[in-house]
Image (tube, rainbow, N blue to C red; front, side, top):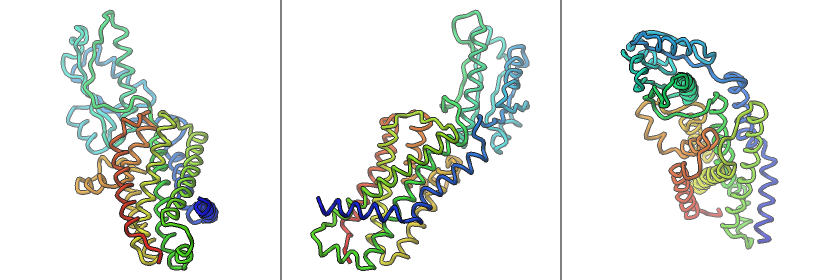
Length: 359
């Protein structure tokens, strides 16, 4: 144990002095959240472009349209079903609501239905649209003399609270930070091997498991510390709220960091030079950064990219973090994401241990 703690301390000191690592992991994430947070605004909700199709033209439907137009978070466009749904497909609308003919009469009888179409590529706009429409419908139902709801919304399940772009961005930046902080462990191992450090360590009582364990714990501590800094910036600068459990967030962050570490160990086990290890790390990290959902939603990505997106560990890490931070999900609710990350962790660790070499 004495050798393990000595190795752990040495690893922590070396990591703290690695300015390149600190800049690429924490620096890139903090700069991204600051830039995107200021660009998309941090003081209020995003504005939604909403298409409204009134096929009824009754007093009730016109009242709903008027209420929608008075909502400051909405820019309302009236038109036909074909025109508004086409605008939705072209990305010019965030959502479209359709009030069919006979809507007003059905409302008075207590069985009215409204169709709502959401833009699935933007969870932020989904949340804004649902909150606005449900608020207005709830107000109409409360004004009715009957005790039952008069309007049923036919809609897809979306977030129940109002998200800003920076709220959605924060979990992605945390996931990206974990990737950049831990994948380079492979470059470190290859550099040690090339410089003869590994040979000297092999001559000591230090076992491979102790070396790997010390690196894992040191980088895990680095990841958690950087994650705290990133979340502090999001919370205190942009007022981002952590809706879910902090324990669930800690567990998910730890598992994600370990999965990225394990992949880094695989790179370090097979690469022969630090240059090759660095190139492999970049080849893996850059596609994950853009296809893993850190900066942008991937639901609208071309179909041919779906198999790649669905295999990337960062996709599952970002999804789990986003569900916990933005939606208050429990660990049980994100168990699929966690199981995939655990699978990556176990498979990569087994492969790296089997391929481990001192020289």
